[in-house]
Image 1 (cartoon, one colour):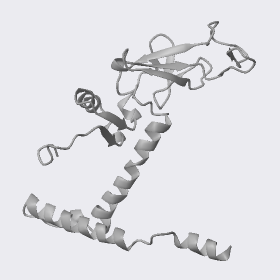
Image 2: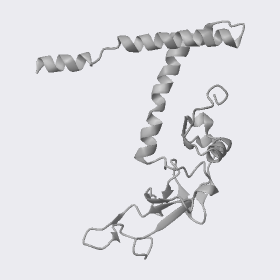
Image 3: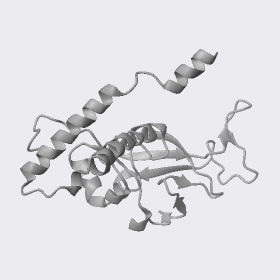
Amino acid sequence: MKKMLPEVTVTKLLLDSAHDAMPYYNYCKQNNITPFIDLNWKCGRPPVYKDDISINSDGIPLCPKGFPMKQAAVESRKGRIKYRCPKITAKGGTPHCTCTEPCSDAKYERNVHLVLKDNPRLFNTPPRSSEEWKLEYNARTSAERCNKREKIDYKLEDGRYRSSMMWYCRLFAIMMCQHLDAWTLPKTSRLKDLLEQAA
């Protein structure tokens, strides 16, 4: 892609869990790319990160009671993410923990700092539990539908090609058909139109 489109700058990389490997994260870091890669637990994860901090399936630290902690800040200059007690509230004017047995005597209860360089695979920016990450990652589904249309509906991989040029010719023809398909889509939902007529 870089060879064919040298002027394009990639800032985000959306990949599924099959690409959850450290070299991808290292490459993204070296090239200032934000990775959005789903975790694959077959690749393993440390059950405990530094002392007694446990990590859940989204790479979020858990409090001693087992609740996912809330992200408090991303400290870019220090290369870390700060998480705070998930049960803290400011009702009544002063911050306090609503747990029956608080795990810390600190004013803002327990805080945890995850250092990104310790494990860029687990400790992602933005965190996997954040709305920003979910919004970006959900865009991948449209690419998956596009791939399914090319491979299965238009039988891209069924052809016997003598060269990669012929494979690209078929792919470009399929992409033109997809574009024509998009032109013929209805501008509005037929169900919506029927509901509006009934009302």
